[in-house]
Length: 493
Image 1 (cartoon, rainbow, N blue to C red):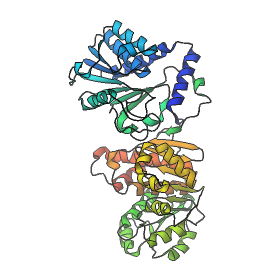
Image 2 (image 1 turned 120 degrees about the vertical axis):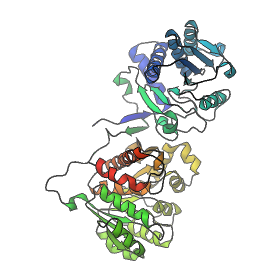
Image 3 (image 1 turned 120 degrees about the horizontal axis):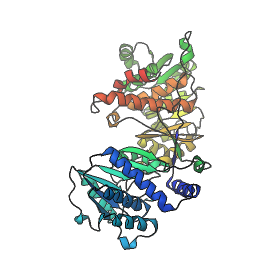
Image 4 (image 1 turned 90 degrees about the vertical axis):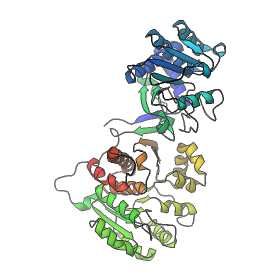
């Protein structure tokens, strides 16, 4: 099993740059040229028949990387124009040296966007406007340059970070849309969360020959888990029996929302739980038995009727289709007092945010799985605040409620007492009803199979996204949550 990948802040990566220069005993311009060569190599690997190149260069080291790329293209006799967003006479340090290198190699440098030729199918654009130091709002003329890049039909390679994307938070309302991003020295968190996955395209990491020792004693912001690094379930023994794999109780399904609870229960079964019970409204029993007779469905009309069922399970998943009416509040209040691990999702989170039920409760053995809107309600924030800094949001929810918190998204963040993990996966086709209910069931099933809480969440989030990607092979639009279930079963082993 591979180790997870560390994800750093922009400040930490600047420190890594300094350490690499010192460890290799090279001038900083040598490291810049090394970055430019790696970016150019990836450019030629991706577009080997490149006919024309446009490089958008800023005034800092990112712009310097761009000038190096332009110079290398000119050496290969590839027609190249470099747009100098900052007048060359204002450049200094390595950026100035890289600009002079490009000029010596015959790069055509222009200082106005109108001097660039119109892009066509033979053109590739390199974005080297802004680096990891960007935050806040784009200023002109950078903003106009970003807009021109995004209007172009040409493919785009971003150097280190797509310009306009915050490398720490993944925030980027006005940023370059890249097809490929080549990032250096350390992977930046913002490339993998927030808007990062939508803006970066394929992310290629180049360590530029950094020695392993430069990374020591530098704590990352988060750890990124992939399919090769997530923990897995142990194989089942030949003499295994169902009680070894957990009894999960799913609580939810108020009037009109029975499908959510049933999907959660079915995904629990498909992810390998030994036994699955469902506590739901009486009118949903027939549908439950028809859809999935393996689930033991129980009618409950009050929290009092739920009480006897709470003595049975090893894990409780509460929230799918729970509603926010008194029925749901009663069930959450009773389930929240059970002395088994809880997975809390959907309307259970909204009730929790209201402060009337389980007020002030903190538990080490529960998993909260909010999407952005639910996280905002739990914190009393605006949704825009969560989107602007998802890392801060997930940390704050975990600090408030303890346990494990899963902030769902294209880059799902998992906060726990040991830090923060990130898992990318899934696709836009999964932006449909019921997907979160499946994740709730998968997490509960893995906890029931005796996985430690954090490991169960890591595997479940990856499994959910991977199943979605497999299901989307037949198309993203029209993808239903239940389409994932056959793949959940295949991938869980």
